[in-house]
Length: 217
Ligand code: T5A
Image (cartoon, rainbow, N blue to C red; front, side):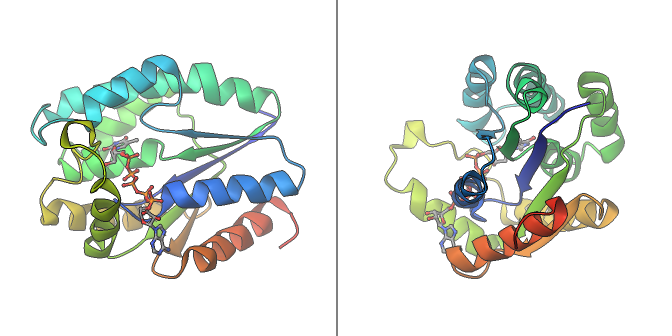
């Protein structure tokens, strides 16, 4: 049994996850919590190496099954070396993406199907899920505009934009997939619109986290 809390953030490209995980961490620290911030793919040294394989290069660099196995290779390392030890030590773990991304991007986006991902998830993680998942939802065109504006200052060979380069239809499928996953897992998910200002979105997230974990809203 873990003693800490595990919160993941999900959503399409440029929805503001990286911005919001930091704001939530700061807010939880002011409440006296011991917090670590981590991300997927990555979050442990070996998993960060796998991240480079996955996020750079051509959109068709990997066949879908290789891609899903690489995400899970990174995830198991991250779980065993970072997330689970922190939870055992009573920390709050905030993770920028986790397995729901694999169900959406590889399961739905690439058409591998949920049952394949479910099976891999069960075998490799012993069906390990967060206590709470925040889904940031925005029209994919608006999200991609934000993500592309941010990437513009980075040289082309260093951009982690392999998924951003996938076709518009892929991103629309993703949005629907995330909303369906949230609908099927309503106990764990809170869906929050990412259309507002950074501080409006942060306030909405805090409200949901506070209610869920009995903190001061
Ligand atoms: N992936 C990942 C899979 O396919 N399967 C998996 O199992 C997993 C785990 C990860 C990629 O890997 C894929 C999904 C992804 O494509 P990543 O670099 O971690 O790649 O990229 P993303 O998670 O998509 O995150 P992004 O960095 O693209 O976007 P974020 O984190 O959602 O957004 P953020 O906070 O960086 O914001 C983007 C820009 O918008 C501004 C920010 O200042 C920033 O410039 N912004 C706002 N502007 C206006 N209003 C707001 N409310 C704003 N919030 C942020």
